Length: 143
Image (cartoon, rainbow, N blue to C red):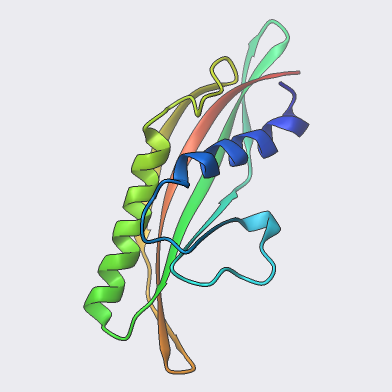
């Protein structure tokens, strides 16, 4: 698979892994979200990809960090924080349940990179809580 096709294919595979999660109203790709999703939601996008400069014949190894951000509204700070944190952790576990994302030969592995429960924001009498997990897909792509 070539780089120009891999980004879409990997994000689509990640979202397919997330579709069976409960208590999530919306799952969207960050590059295709307009307007922003209505919580409880997972927002999925990839950050800057880097080439590891490991050449294997005509292929290159790339790292693709993928953000799994969970958003919830709640008026109870403890409940809202816990719900967002648990949703992000469940999303991470769902993605890691198939560490090739069903793309054996292209996706070499998916590993946890980071996890963060972020501060909250209040807007229009609603309090928005969010947390995110970042996983990194290691890809073997055609040059």
